[in-house]
Image (cartoon, rainbow, N blue to C red):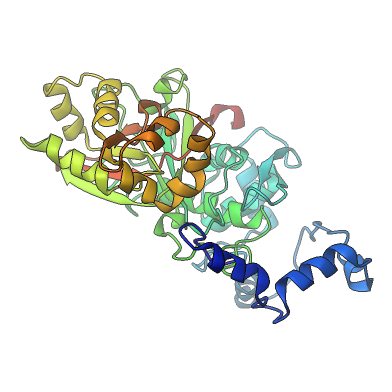
Length: 397
């Protein structure tokens, strides 16, 4: 069924059910009834058991043919890879004390699909393919263990944003200065790429039109991973806010990437600028605000001596008319049922008059990270906090 279904008339929706299956060209409901009522045939029985086992090694061949094999089987992100030979995988495994056959975690491209199990060795294969170094491997394992795929198959075209905190940033030479969010650092780039590769290969694929249905796709899926500039920040780092110790090394995953806003300051009219920016955001997805250290210190000068104070201001000033809020596709699809059921704050928002300004996010949903090289008072706001989780890297050393 083509998206969206929100806002369509009952007649349009019924036409899907009473119409023709666009793939088989057969009446849709007839196929459903037959599928439920008829006994299993030989073809059904053939696919009753799904064998996930794969050969540990592929047959030897020329380098050119092996690269072609990986592309033809959708095992790559279509950029050149490092072929994962046994020797290279063994060298990657030296980056952790965990056994190669230990189960790392489970991933799936959508919430209704069964999660696939992966091992340390399988993660190492993808880390090699991405060009990562063994010293990066604990970070990659932490991402694999998160249970959050970087290749979400939603039609919304999600992209993952990962933020690294703690001593590991220095240990592996991550960039949190000039160009922190760009392609200017080996660790940043290959860790993000490894997260994407392991996600598509260890969850059952990510093939457009088959196991990936993001209508537009997302540039962030190439690997949006960076570190927080804790030393230049006047505020607590992200992982400390999430309950970790300053000396812990962690990675936080933000699911979304639906939108990107940008600005400079805080200048004299920063409040008006921020309010306009909030209103232009996707209201279903709260923001991840990434600011240069110059911006953070500018906010401190205006009285925001903690991230929490700025986050509270953002939550109180992120408003839009109720009519616009409820006209949003995913607010209507995913949040309206909570409102109808009486769940707050959605129920109060639903009772608001159409032109009444309502607050669109809770403070607990908004996150701020400091990074960058202090060459400009620049900030970016990403749709990146639909769900955020912070994971220990140290447990995978």
